[in-house]
Image 1 (cartoon, protein in one colour):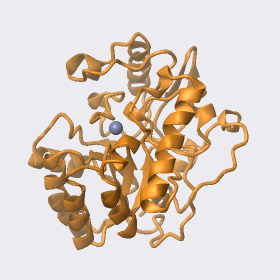
Image 2 (tube, protein in one colour):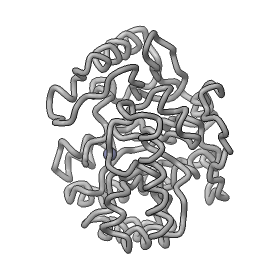
Image 3 (cartoon, protein in one colour):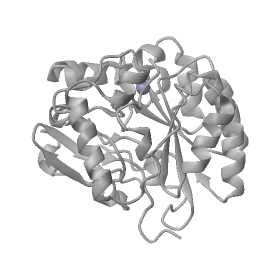
Length: 305
Ligand SMILES: [Zn+2]
């Protein structure tokens, strides 16, 4: 229940522009992913590798169609992440959360801290760290954990954080039937509503794995990331903090997992350092001014600073 990020190769971390090399590497990743032997999977992930037309989340935004696969490559602007509307789910109501942004991320340095796989036993500690810096974050929760920690979920909502849907049991969605995908989301929605009184308006697919079939079942934005701390691998607070601080840029979406004590232990330093650099800590919806693209990675908004 703790690994979201392995579909993107670490050697591409920090890339900011599409290059022929990066694209070739990305294609390679897609091809290896479709054969079920992704690099990260080979190294440390005991879970089965996603396969069968997997979308590999890299960075930023536009999408390249490849035979049997949907491949995301980076670009500078989140707007470019707006994807082919044909791929929206039938009957898409467009019910995306559009809260009034507390800050305008086109004009100030914003970063979206995201925490996956909870709620868990360390989430309350994390909430205290965030409150100290008036930071708001986005929690992509797993429904089966919401059942275990409903009061933590409620406190997370009450503190003003955004809740996203990270499925019920953290499966590889590309391996499920259409009904299976919907069930994963609906069950989680129900538990979040019962515990916190809100319905998640954003979805993060486990491992960042999705394809056209998955997207057809999900009308809500899929939120990926462009800074990966690999905190599930580096169970060391200093390392996790360093990885976040080294890669962050205005507009970044940083991936953490609040089920790890070491990750929560890294957050005070991350908050202190980024606050000193002038960053504001916003939810994903706020980062995009309430208009989250259909597939969002996080990148520097245009004309920023
Ligand atoms: Zn996850």
